[in-house]
Length: 457
Image (tube, rainbow, N blue to C red; front, side, top):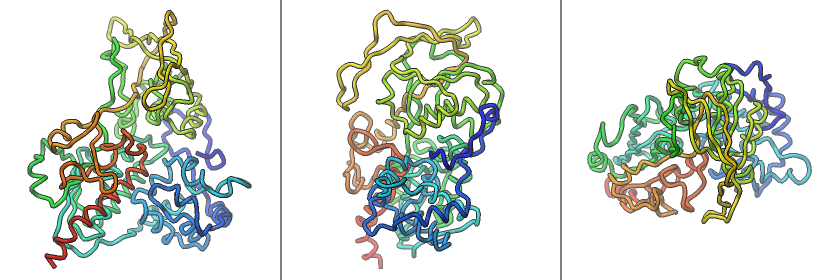
């Protein structure tokens, strides 16, 4: 997140302020920025975008005041392009590849993308139409970025598409898992509406395996896409984890978006364990819920943290403290079962693991205590192993095995995308990558099933 486009809020005014921190570009600023673009013929920014948005084209449309055309170019390539304008690590992707990095500063591609899509949201634009029905159907389990992207493309190709979503609203991570002051729910819901208005049926509060059986799903549809995301937060596996005041980060962020804000954290000391993007969200959310002091503990060093750099800078601006090379060993509660202390131990980095990151090793005799009122766990999430088993899919350590070109699983009728397949060399867990998975799976299904379309015609 760029400092020059962010509306800064003093720490005193952060309490209960869940308004979006980035005010976005003004029309004049957007026009000036669009006119800085060189509109490269062989633009490296396009290559750096996982969904292949034609970035020079959408920026040129802004410069010519064709905002609907600009938004259409963005959303055609990325069905969750409005959300990605806010949460993508653009400094590492499109903006990082901009040729102007070598002379001045890169084009503010993310902010321009937001400017165009915000116009479409404000003006209630419906950008796409469903294709002529081809008589075939696809069932999608999970209504997050990957599932929505697959559904959008399949509807445009003429398929009857049904999404099964366990939560009350579709949108997945964009709706529930990213704090409101970075991604408002109305942005994610506009993207859901774009899909639903193509005739895609979205069955919310519908859990596959409970509300509908796996066998019925397989019998009902010509193809099935698994886009279920991740399951519950991982456990710390230390003493005292059951104490009051110990929270799961994903649920903590979701509650901040779906429940009435309370004063439970006002003046409190909060520790977040982990250093990924979700940990940053939990920490900055705690600041806005009134916490007096917020610390992030991470067992490795800053170099190994998985949070994006702009997320890290954002947390520091909110006065979040970082304690590197620190691991929790025990949670200690009072007589009423409320967490009050966190016992930690200092770490040092040893030999690299299989992934190339150096392993953290405890420093003997370095234990110490941190006084706390709340602890938030953000060390990763578990996977839906029950669904993998129910569909009888081959997997390695919980990562479903797929054909990397088609996203087809060991069951030829079933495809898997998004968090279901991230890991083990199968891509990086980004919203934009999940969107591309969904698109590619949709095209692969169409290639597989089009013989049936021809025979029916």
